Amino acid sequence: TIFYQIELTAKYTKMLGAQLFGRLGIGLTPEEFSTLDTLSSNDGLCQRDLAKLILKDRANTGKLLDSLEAKGLIERELSVKNNRPVKFVRITEEGLKKTKETYEKLTPHHEKVEERIKNSDLEKIGELLKDLREIMEDSMEIDI
Image 1 (cartoon, rainbow, N blue to C red):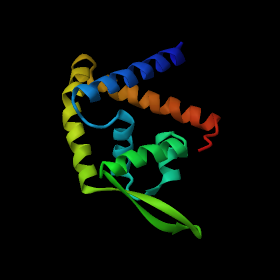
Image 2 (cartoon, helix red, strand yellow):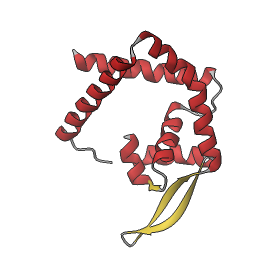
Image 3 (cartoon, helix red, strand yellow):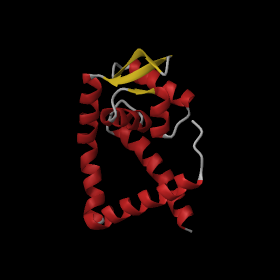
Image 4 (cartoon, rainbow, N blue to C red):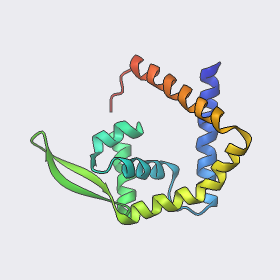
């Protein structure tokens, strides 16, 4: 079924990502990179909003942020939101640099995929997956 194919592809992607990040000496896990990438586009999120974007619970998001903060790639800033103290996450210059370097290291591997699958087909796949994800989001509650 399509759902089996998606699940299998997701598992392969996760395994390949871990292997590739290790082989390239990136110094991040794919999850840490995904978090940095999300923050590079959405700087200044609170942990709860970030957790929703990366589909992790707040505890796992906190562990990722602890690791990224220890590496000097993010900073957390205490502020107030809805009259409650909240820590906002900001990517550092070093974090932006690391994100860019990681993209540069991953580009040749992305190009190998593009050599085998036409760009127009990759765009169609991306659009179809986004449509499917939106349908699924409409049918479920994400409690993060």
